[in-house]
Length: 235
Image 1 (cartoon, rainbow, N blue to C red):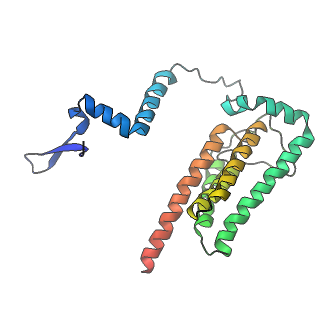
Image 2 (cartoon, one colour):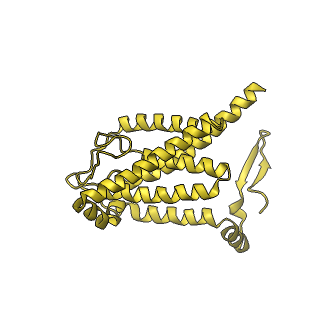
Image 3 (cartoon, one colour):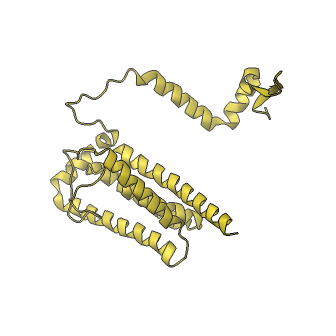
């Protein structure tokens, strides 16, 4: 199992590879399941999704979008809808988190001289603006806005992907890189609470939140590669 494939030389002088799984025995399957259980788990998930995807009926064009996050936060949504002061208070706390993430990202560049988080944010929010403009989703009819919501108040905004979640994730990734693990954990917890609040107010769909996390990880990686390539050119 040390080789991923078995190669044989062809008549033309090239190499033809034979996938290693074609030679597997029962013990090899057990080995893969024990030592590579994460890919196996995703393989099982893929097979499950393929088996049920075709049986799920599409949402009617006369019905509101179906979002599991909206369903899970229905009680909190009703509470916020009936308590405007509570909704405003949570919006204020969320705005504080927004200021914290922007301040931290700016601090890493202006004070610590590390531009990676700032480059990540520039890449990410440019992409978000382009994607948001290309696909402009309608505002949920259940949306609970607030005039003090960071950074736009009750103005219009793009749904995909969540800039709130993405910005907080960028800060958390940088904190982990600098071994500020406790601070990163605090930001992660606040990000989860922020996500629940965004779902409850119908400020974002679940896919927007997941997209925000994924985009932050992707653009952080790209910013790291940009820095590495820049250093190589300077040598």
